[in-house]
Each structure stands twice: as C-alpha cells, then as structure tokens.
Length: 404
Image (tube, rainbow, N blue to C red; front, side, top):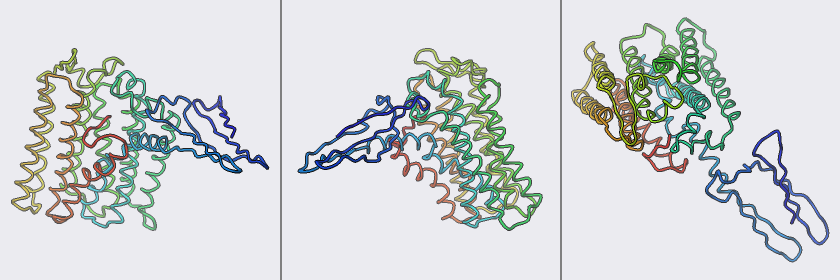
C-alpha cells in the first residue's frame, strides 16, 4: 500500500489522503478524500490508525478516524453552544405565550428562530474575541482559538444563521397578510441583529455596550410576541420584556464582567466591571461595593417585576407565588455569593453563574403556569437543564463544568 499526503497552500492546515491498494494483478486507487489538520497536536488523541493486514491476494487497509470525527463534532457543538440552546432559544417562545398563542407548530418555529439568533450572536462574538481569548490559558481550548474551526467557517456560520433566522421568521407567516404587528416583528428582529452585532464587534471598546446586547435579546423576545399578536400587547409581555433585558444585562455586565476581569484589561476592554474598579490581583478579586450593589439592584428589580402581572389581574395559585419567592430568594443568594467573592476562581464563578441562570430561566415558566398549566410550565422550566444535560456529553466535557 502506498500512502501519500498532498497539501494545499491555499487552504492552510489541510490535506487529502489518497491510498493505492496493490494486488497481484492490478493497481487501483481508492477515493478517500478526508480533510485533516496537519497540526495533529490539536487533538490529544490519534487522528487515525493505519492497520495493514496481509491477505492471500490483497493488502487490506482500515482507517480508523473515529477519534478525529468525535473531536471535530465536539468542537462544533461547543462553538454553536448547542448545550445552552434550550434556554438561549426560548425568548421568542415566551413572547408568543405572553400574547396567548400556544400552537406547537408556531412555538417550534419561534424556538428555531431563537436558536439561530443565539448561534449567530455567539459565533460572531467568538470570531471577534479570538485574539483576546487566546491570551487566557483556560480559554485556549475554545474551538476558534485552538484552530479546530477556522475564522472563515465562523463567518460562514454567522451568514448561514442570519439568513435562515429571517427565512423561518417569514415562513411563520406563509399565506398570511403582513400587518403592522408583523412589520414591527421584522423590525424587532433587525434591530436585535444590528445591536447584537455592534456589541460583538465593537462592544469591548464602547463603555456600557452591555446595554446593547441586553436590548438586542429583549427585541428577540418582542419579535416572538409581535410575530403572532393580533391585538394590543398586554402588561405580561412588557414585564417579560424587561425581565429579559435585566437578565441579559446582568449576564454580560455583572457575571461576564467578573468572570473575565483577569484578562479583559489586557486588550483595553472598556466595560462596566472594569470601569467600576473590578480587578484581579494574583488569586484575589476586588469587587467594589458600587458594582456589587448594581448587580444586586438588577436582581431585586427583576424580583419585583415578576409579581406585577399578578397585581394587575393575572390569575395565580398561592403555591405558585410561594414557589416564585423561593426561586427568587435562591437567585438573590447566589448573587450575593458572586459579588462578595474575594478569591478569583473561574470554575467556581462559572458554577455560580450556571446555578443562577437555570433558576432564573425557570422563573418565567412558573409565572406562566396559571395560563399554560402546571405540565406546560414544568416542561418549559426544565427544558434548559434537560437540554443541557442531554447535549453536554457530546462536547467531551462534564455536566455543570462549562469551559467557556
């Protein structure tokens, strides 16, 4: 058997394996076209294992590319944030439910639009931050940083997800007249894309840019409501709109600001955390009282917002209100632990963030239980964590130990 590797200067770090099997009577090529990284140190496993078995007439060969395929699949799953999409894609679904639409076909399309929008945002952010992430040892395993996924492919993912998010947005209205609500829905989705892109590409240099991504995510939620609304939008929709804004602002400005405080300053990042005086010195982290108060204030404001729809006449169960109080107390408890940290431990910070995120995502489904039923509320409440548990093993990492 002859084995030849041909490289392509125009496509860095790739090659094609061509094998030729020699028998006693003839020579024939076997079409095996496999793009592989030349730098096999990217993966801690053998990319392929060539086994040659001598037969009576032919040399038999077997390529074992399973390890390579698993590694590549895991990298793309991480890059697309597949384990997190159970929660990240849900805002448009909440939007539709908030205006009384429960049709599963409609909700499924909205979930898909939400998923594509989330993938677009994270892919573009990874593309923009690849140099910054490369400065941090713990982030060097990110697919784009280590070169497992090229920057060209990242751009392709961004274009693909943007195009198809609008495709499915319009597919939702197939055969229907475009009224003012639908026009407003398209405008919301466009604004979400523009603001999210500004944050991803230029947010590190714009003080307070966390507000851009918070408004962007809120517009994705509002798109879900406007896309299916046929009458005036009520207070429930606007309350969830504000809750979405608060959650996203907190996730980026407070949680992200603390988590990345050890390296953001290296690239001259101008965010609320650094501007407020959050800094890491050795193994210690200093979180000023003003910044800690900002984070706690967002959580308290959100807790108050949760109960406003009930005050204005939305039906409820007493146990539902009690459960919401317990959940919100849990979120506030985690918040206090986060903003009073003295030691900088990224793994601990990630776990605190993950715990608060799952609790926070479950709040809106519990709010909606009196409208969609207990079963529907439970499904929506546990969807993010069940989705996460189901898909995380595909990334090769342990559950509840996020890498990014």
